[in-house]
Image 1 (tube, rainbow, N blue to C red):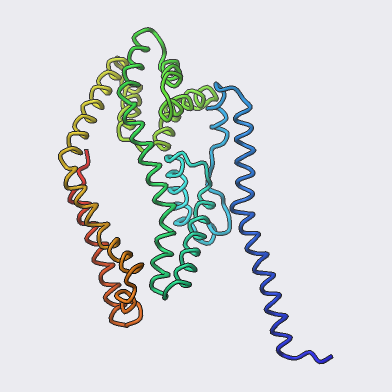
Image 2: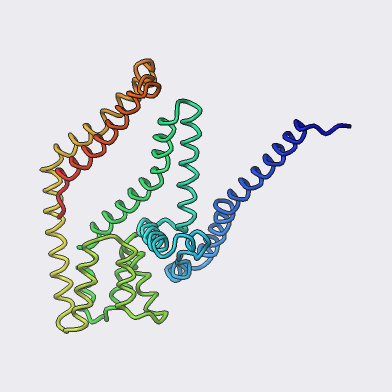
Length: 326
């Protein structure tokens, strides 16, 4: 039997197919199946303990950035970026490692590239890959902003509860424990964790600073800063809590008033941002002959790139015009 060059190419192709399938399955197992099993095991252990021990179990589940090969190749810059991403995941209450999150981002971007390449040309595949790769970051931003809003809404009542507890004779750690028990999540969960951390040997000031890292809230920073300054200078802590609660309440009133006055501008900005993309996809679905020249003609590609750059710059300018930080 003669072994031809065609047979050799067929054998090499089949071998490459098996190797690719093995690498793909290994990637899925390393980044998805194994972390899901570990997360399910940790959740079962947490559920098996009493409710009062849940914050302590959460302390033991704290995730850190792993020193894998990717971080070694990226150096200190890559480690800093991954640590920032890990902190943002904690601020959004997403119990996931930063490297796994980036793996999900890369996988979704590759899926967008493949789908776009099957449907249209190279430019559209890049757009779809970028769009699908940004979806996890959009989800992270929404979860993070929702938690921050919930914490800011709970802060005035928590400050009043702390002030009353301190006036009744409680120490600050016991007042934080009571506030954690009486306040629903997410702020109650964070306060309970602060209390458990200082019980396990961490100083109260360090536990409060760690809470600020886990929650992206300016009002919470006011509270922690006030407690740390009072620990250095002395004074009435109960009165300080009352003043901070009053300050936060007035700030929230001003913020809601500003949002009401700028609602028309924000809705107009949202319409101006969505309308061009909506018309583009509408024409792409129902009148594709008007859209294909933008991808097939060299001048159309240049026009599409220029329009995309101007749209991004326009969205940045509009966002800066309608955004008022309080």
